[in-house]
Each structure stands twice: as structure tokens, then as C-alpha cells.
Image (cartoon, rainbow, N blue to C red):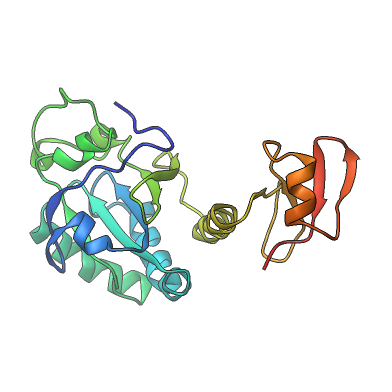
Length: 219
């Protein structure tokens, strides 16, 4: 079953390229991005690992831990990393989970429970739905999910923008409008009454419509 927004992210124990982890313990009190891949040695995923590695300092600055998952063994991951370094000029600086038996892909709803075989028996096309991003909050809730086709590389700058919004709106009673970026105006959430909004935003707001109360981004 697909994990819905607000659901608790399943805990797990797994082997990674950086050793055995218990997911909740590894994550600690941080935010987390878990992003998955249908197979090692695939061209789009190779570029994505490199892109994430280059941007990892930006995720670190936001207290976001990064972990990848690919439906292959740790031994395959180790060989793949050689190709990533050779073609992307950077090595993964985050753990890659090995999932040769498909257990985690199934646990996170990326493959059906009755998906047969192991990574050795399956092609990338067989695992095409294992191309998801999960953003998980410190209380282990699924805050964002997105699944891409194999032919479309992921935009990790957009992921950072979305995390900025998630972290801002988790702290303040606001929402971010279309194409919002750091420093732009935000809107007061509809569930907040005008009376409560006046207490929280004493300088007031612009309201082109009663339900659209625009304020500067809280700091």
C-alpha cells in the first residue's frame, strides 16, 4: 500500500554502503530524504546520485539526512560507485541501502507485495515504480512524496525548495504559494481565524480575497 502524507514512515534495519543501520536510530532528530532507484548501472540514476552528492551540504545545512535505496546488493552498489565517480566526478557522501530481496521497496509501497524474485531476476523496468522521494519529518511522518518515471531525472534544487517550505510551515501557521522561494511572501493558513491571525501577525496582512491573507515570510 502506498504511504499517504502524514503516515508514519516504517522503521527498518538494512545493510548500506556505510554499514548496518537501524533507520530511526540513524535518522535521530533530523529530517530525512530517502530516494530510491530501480537498479544500479542505470544512466539517469547515476546522474542523480552525483547531483545529490554535490548538493548534500545544502541538505546538511537544513538538518536533513540523506539516504538512497537501490534494488541491488551492496556488492553491486560498490561497483556502481566506481562508475559514479568516473562519470560524475564525485562519490556518494551518503549511504546507499542494498535491497536485493525487495523488502524495503515493498515496505514503502514502491512495489506490490506479490512482486516476485530478487534483484538478480528483475530489470530496471520491472522495478520502475521504485523511483520515489520521501521527505520525512523528525517525528517520522511522511511529509512529501513524489515518484518519477525512469526517463525523467529528479530536480534536487526543487527538493530543497520544498523542504524549505515544509520546515517553515511546520514552525509557523503559514503556507507557501506557487513558485515560492526563501524570502518571498507567504499566506496565513485558512484554519486560522482573523482574531488569532491578528495576534500572530500584528502588522496585519494584504487580502485580495478574504481567504487570501498575505504576509511577509516569518523569521
